[in-house]
Image (cartoon, rainbow, N blue to C red; front, side):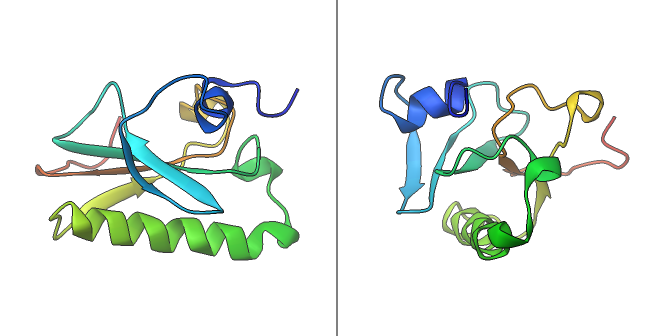
Length: 113
């Protein structure tokens, strides 16, 4: 059932999070297993399983998520950061609710792994 992920439960208020930003389209909170000094997750309120499942009707929402990612990164004091979207199990997606990772606060290497 859509929304029955840990992120769906966070959106419903069933599980607490360290909220950084919220509006009518998305929620941003700190990752519980940060990979850098700043590691935020940007999730849409609409339960889209992954970027693979997004469609043209989601274009405005996807743009909003990217703009919010940039805004919260700057509010966290980051001058540079990485924005990551894992799409599918083999890409490292473990929660099947679309989410953007905003990672920074240290030098990041490439390739990531």
